[in-house]
Length: 200
Image 1 (cartoon, helix red, strand yellow):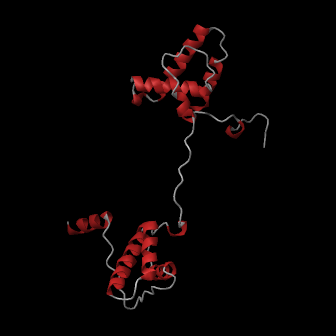
Image 2 (tube, rainbow, N blue to C red):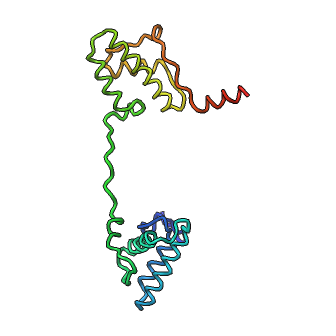
Image 3 (cartoon, one colour):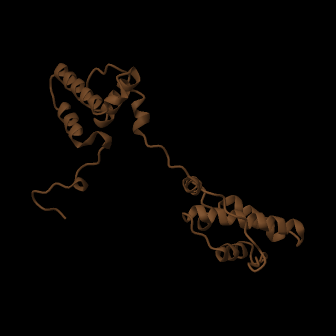
């Protein structure tokens, strides 16, 4: 939608350095139109000083000034013809966006349990029945309940743990909730603080 008199950010060119805002970008664009080289450099110095004063807490170190001049070069798309007081050749590396990291999403539907638990589920599928498997089932079920509690901000369900354990072991492990007793969940800091308050 384009309404006369209204100027939407979505209709404007994308900012290379959005942290400085559109007004600084306008100053950079104006600077590039200045014909006199000396005046153009003075304008650039004023822009960098304005950028510096936007974040005074970051100081005026050589590294900080290098960063500001690099950012100025990026915002001008490297078209600002001035004698830069620093070497801006590394600014091209800053301007290039790094390739996005490929996060492992082997089993996104069980992120609350984690990929390591999948390895345990696979192990349980092939383990013979006996005390060793029973011990691993107990450890696994209790860990699942802890993870589920943390993922859901304190909410947990014994039946969900039993259902998930059966589902992820292809039905090999059937947790009998009438006989199996989960270990007490670890106390949270908030719980401990409440107990301390009650003792006072």
